[in-house]
Amino acid sequence: DGVSPPVSPRITVIGTGYLGATHAICMAVLGFEVLGVDVDETKIRRLGEGEVPFFEPGLPPLLAKATDSGRLRFTTSFEEAAEFGDIHFICVGTPQRQGSDAADLRYVDSAVSALAPHLRRPALVVGKSTVPVGTATRLTELVRSLAPAGDQVELAWNPEFLREGYAVDDTIRPDRLVFGVASARAEERLRAAFAPVIASGTPVVVTDLTTAELVKVAANSFLATKISYINAMAEICEATGGDVHSLASALAYDDRIGGRFLKPGLGFGGGCLPKDIRAFVHRAEELGVGRAVTFLREVDAINKRRRSRTVDLIRELAGGDLTGVRVAALGAAFKPHSDDIRDAPALDVARALHRSGAHVTVVDPEATDNARRAHPELRYATDAISAATGADVVALLTEWPQFQEIDPHLMGSVVTHRRMVDARDALDATAWREAGWTCRALGRP
Ligand code: NAD
Image (tube, rainbow, N blue to C red):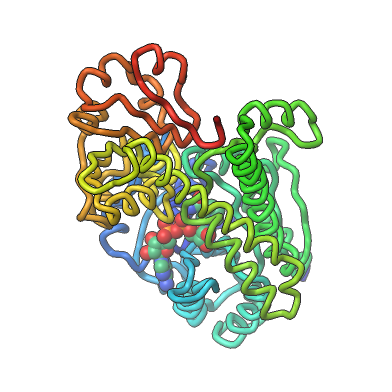
């Protein structure tokens, strides 16, 4: 249209959870004026007071820095957001729908519906949430029909690849940026919004809306498949007496395969991978191409079997019956360096043990509060040694560095039986055996 985009667009981030809060804070640190928006008043108040409402390494000092600079504020008002922003990032949740594999899009729809009627001047609405393919096209129509500025308001998709635990670094120095756009103007605006990130050498893939949506689920599907692939090999090793960890190391020397995400163990969890692959299969089936991704159902099934296999190992070590057995569960978060317990393998195992009659005491450096809120039926300890006191079996379920540093002699002096199930292959089994422990690991003889 001949009008250049603002040199430094003003940014709003709608939805200030793990993704949105990180994005808002990092954009302000990169020099933009940012307004964070959420419907959760408590979350907005806490962020406004300088408190990150979840655990993410490195984020609290950056929130303080961003707030002190005056470039970052928070609100619950969509009207204020529409008046303030040139670019609106949609970062709300897209969880699995209850009773279905599909993604629940109600938060995306309601965020867009709340914002669009206030958009009275040119703006770009950018979806960052992970959504089923076709959502962006549908939202384009929705925005156009609701926004007073009409086709002066455009929609783009910019899928997010950050990892919890490394979220700050992944936001400031991502592997790549993906811009799904329907016009050159939208691309220009996105380039302005990411100028500092692009200037530091980040590659940009510019594509259409549909492909941008697909990149995200394709990436997550690949990662999930790689993990389940090696866990399928673990099942074979368990049946044949092979050692999947040696197998994985040998495979990893082939750089076409590569060692990353080839780690056998308790499998993947969290608020993304499991629900994203299920939603992908569901969406593909709706589109009549379900056959192309049926293998993802198997990927999901292999992943879930690691959890039941861990319960079986613990039962075996306890002598065949879990009734009344005291188990110390080391870990609740779905992975270390996070307090996220969404679809956490560790908690799934702890709950299954509890249902089988075991007395389970859970310990996690960061996720205990979240776990206790979701599963008050389990017991919780504040440190690994108290959790293990009197235990018949100890199970390492989340590979926090703190757990890897436990002294096997010290823990051996407080347990009733020195029995360890290392579901993450995180411990030095030789050292534990020397300290008198019976050790079992997934995928090892
Ligand atoms: P989250 O649950 O931590 O945060 C979602 C936030 O959206 C909450 O604070 C919620 O109150 C808010 N919200 C809900 N409805 C709203 C509305 N109508 N208006 C404004 N705010 C609203 O979720 P998350 O982990 O940050 O994930 C968000 C999206 O990002 C999901 O689609 C997820 O798949 C995707 N994603 C997440 C990660 C990750 O590591 N967490 C990585 C990449 C992509």
